[in-house]
Image 1: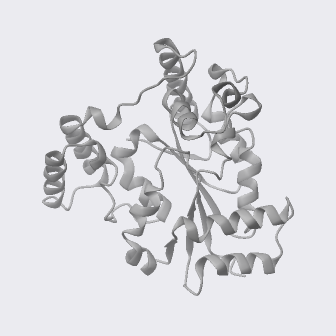
Image 2: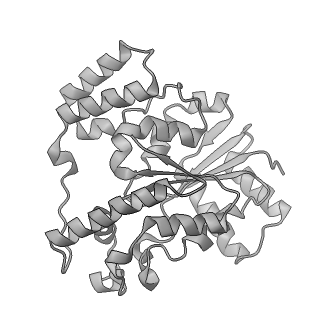
Length: 295
């Protein structure tokens, strides 16, 4: 069993990237392969991981179990860094408020995937999102629960991503944790991709503009690409500033308009949850052991 392979888990959260990390990185599959990095299609590992976790029932896998699982995922390829992404790693989205708190089982669930390869180095990557837009998106995407069942008596004012992150850290103290805000992804997307792939900060990737181009006009995207292509020596900080300027000028309002229509919610609800989230971001930025990616 190769215990030197770095196991990298992208935990979601749901509705923050919709598997865009997978497809953006796979655009550079050859470059990643040269560096020993593997980003499989979700269908090639999600089910086998789920089946192994269910089969183990909380027990540690044997060396044979680990070898079989790893072989099923990487086949015969030479790999030093294996990336796997699933918004259900934290838990089933429809049950995210079960028990009255956000992802009550995040520690247990991340501990289980970490223990699939207990002797390998492991990293976690997590994009968080404002509950004011995150909760409506998750509720809308599921069909099994009424709003009352989904909320499960949760006091929305108590929801904190910082609590989820601390619980993950306590359960997995040896696993570095990279965190970012979904709201910032159009600007910091290239950095997110490189952090997950373990690449040098100056490495250029084909999928760098995959997110920002979804919320900009076509003319704006074309001008941004031209501007960056003509200035290949810009640092990542400079490129980030350029992306921010172009986004502000060519932003498409209709691309990100979100209708929030939940029972009992009013503008004051959205404002209050947003303020709580912004305070929580400051708390997360100061957490020891968290690499918080910001614009």
